[in-house]
Image (cartoon, rainbow, N blue to C red):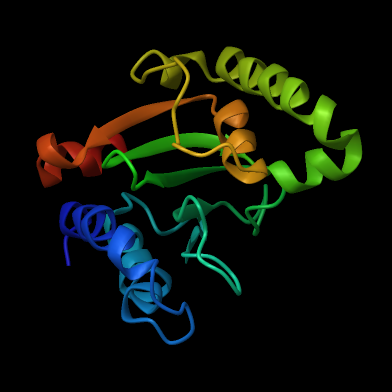
Length: 179
């Protein structure tokens, strides 16, 4: 399945499927399996040992499902470090390709109030350290359509990226180039 088809399927089907049980749900299995595979097969180089993981949630549906690319030298989990991730705002039909950070470790270290400020400061530092890449992407804030702890952390941790709209999803070649 193409990257474009995967992104569109998650945006289209998630609002309906989220009303059903998560356990053994076909869309949840798709996000973890074939959705992650679509991203993996779109990567330019698999020689870096990159890993891809998708999550519709654990135990309960996530407010913001995601599919992330991890570089094991930096992190192998979405809870710490930094990584590239697709964050789905299924309420408004958008998905953001984001260079983002693990929010859970920051929240544990600094507490809920300070963690958002720390994530924003680190996002600015990331932008300055990889300015050559940042100039090709949007550095403005992202909107994930939720006031939950994790989505607010993802918004604060966003260094740069690109937001795609379901109704104006770019072609496969542009999506792969951005990734």
